Image (cartoon, rainbow, N blue to C red):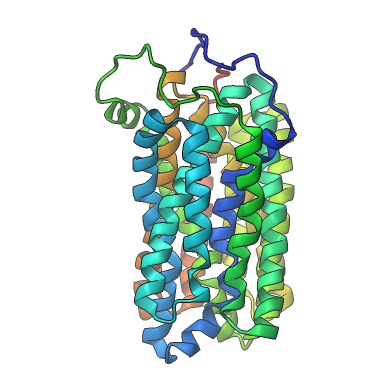
Length: 406
C-alpha cells in the first residue's frame, strides 16, 4: 500500500535541534531498558522470593508483565496521542516511567513488582508511540530510515551499558540497586523532551480527518504485518525471559557473567541496526528480513546448544544481529504503510503487536520446557524460525518493499 503525503502539518519544515533528536531516541531507549536491566538479576530475585520452580516461573511472569502493559498501552497510546499530542504524551509518560521503573527500590513482594512492571509497560508504550510519531513527522524518505536506524543504535548502546551496569551493581549491592537505572537515563530524555520538542501540535491524526473507527481500519489494512511481528517477538524475547534461567542451568549464576552474555546481544543489536540500513538500501527489504530470520534461528538454536559462557555469547551475538535487523525493519514497515493521519494509531498498535509476543513467550515456552527441557525449547523455536526462512526461500515469497511516504 503506497502512501502519499498530501497535507501540510505544523512544523513540517522545522529542523529539529539536538535536544529534540535526543528526545526522539526515547522509544528505543525506554523499550530497551525495560528488558535489559532485570535479566542479570532474575535468578537472584527468584532466590530472594523463596527459590524453586514456582519462584522462577513467577519471576519470569513478572519479567513479562511489561509486555502486557505494552500490548494494552499501545492501544491506549494510539488513542491518547490524538488528544494530548506527541510532546505532552512523551513528557508525561517519561515521568511515569521513572516512578514505576524504580519500584524495585522500595517494593519487596512479587505481586507489587508485577503490578508496577505492568504499568511500566503502559508508560513505555506511550513513550514509543510519541517518539516514533515525532520521527515520522520531522523526517521523510531516506532520512526517516536513517533516523530509525540511529535511534535503534543509540537505544542499543544504552542497553549494553545498562546491562553491564546492572550485573556489576547487583554483584556489589544486591538485586534492588539496579532498579535505580530506571531513574538516571529517563531523566535525561525527559529534559530533552521538555526543552527540545517545539510546542506545536503533533498528533497521530490530522485535524482534517473525519475517518471513523480508525483503529479498526488500521488493523484491517495491516493485520498480516502485525501477526508476523507478534510471532517473531515470541522468539526475540527469549533473551529477556529465558536466557537467565538457561545460563543458571548451565552453572552460570553470577549476575556479572550473565550480564556480559546478555550484553553481547545488545552490542550486536547495534551492528544489526546499522546493517539494516545498508542491506535494505542495497538489496531490498526482503533480503534484510531473511537475513534477520537466519541470524535469529541460528542464535536461538545456538543458545540451546550452549553449555558455557563463551558459546552462549556467540549465540547472543547472532540473536543480537537479528534483533537489530528485524526491529528496524518492523518500524520502517509500519511507518511507511500508514497514512499520515493514521500513523500514530498504526505505530501504537505495532507496539501492542510486538509485546503481545513478549507476553506469550513464557506461555509458549513453559509447556515445551515441562515436556522436554529448556534447552529443547530453544531448539524448537529456533528450528521453526529457520523452517519459515526455508519456506520463504522455496516459495520465493517476498515481503513487500517499504513504500516511501511523506
